[in-house]
Image (cartoon, rainbow, N blue to C red; front, top):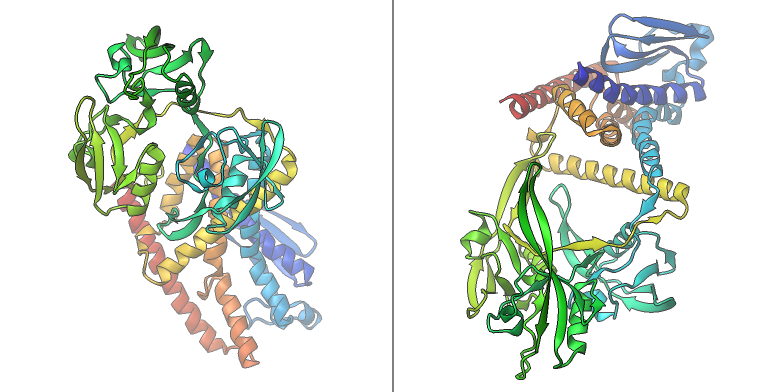
Length: 541
């Protein structure tokens, strides 16, 4: 019953908005509307306002607006000739039939607006980590810089900054930053990278090479003869102070170590110890002290940033088969030095399933070379949809924290702008999906029917109101697109007839319309059967 109510709450508003679009448009151009019905079958409730009867029917799989002259062959009283849809100008008929799908395409803006209006804080555009050799590194951006404007446009959040950069691959951008209370201008050229969206389509995007996260001062040790190793420090330890000065980030740790020269280094560090408890295994952090005297040969203390070290390897993964082990340091990939894990991740994402050469080093051993071949792994999300992702199977040491969220400046404009952008992104995704299906790049196995919607509605409702409203927005766009398809019996089919009429300068014959409608009905029924089969196999087989 929970799924049933969720299903009704999911498609009910979509049907209502769609039919309301037709109704309002018809009223605006003075087309006589006899009935407005939500649902099919005999009316459970009915009420009449003026000339229009409003009904609620028991089968919640659609609805309709009955308008005078909609069938084309009906007898129209002489007094109502001017109010028949068939006698209205072509633009008016376009408007009335297109208003339903248009309402579904606009509904997500309202849904997303209220969704984003609930947000009160955003992650600021403060740089936590700069990737070595990236566009940001070359432009002189450093940790702690706040990006306040790009090409004169105010930047309020990390998301806005990321989007502006992604939309300008290879383009020179004037970036204004705030550093130590001062405003500075920098020219940055985002690196052009190929990125695949949720549909697997590769598109060029801009990359700045920055992260919102600050790496904690966690260390890695590869030289077992180093002062750090001899004093008992191990890979994964977190340094908290050097010579009495607190250490907050991995970058600060490196700068402070370099600033000590060859002098004695006194440091405090934390080490995690797993402790069993009734709630599961907890981590107990023990604080310890050490004194390091850097080697006179210039080898230093032996302390390295941990974010180029392997923390864990999944058994049976490509990384496991390539010979990676916990504690290994990744030195390079295909000849590119990997002082940071992000460099490795970037090369891997671009090469995807092509073989790659990794240079590794285990503690106390000489570097070695191995070949890495990623795999594509298929998994199912909470909606039982098959997803694919590249599988590496190695994970780095990555204790990360971000800047404190800040109150949104201009919540109304933020919510409205984000709603329009999100709706545009969903419409673009739907259009790409449709093109892929028409060009046979995507098969009919992705189609879903009412059976699938029933399951999806229940799952989304279990995730909470926010997830449910986002699903409403997604399906509203879907419904709008489907109804615009040029298939007779759909709104798009009627719009196609109107277009043919505009080209021929006369309406399509009734016999031709009937044949086209019969073909359209067969096509729709076939698609529904295929979609129902897909859902049965997906959810119950």
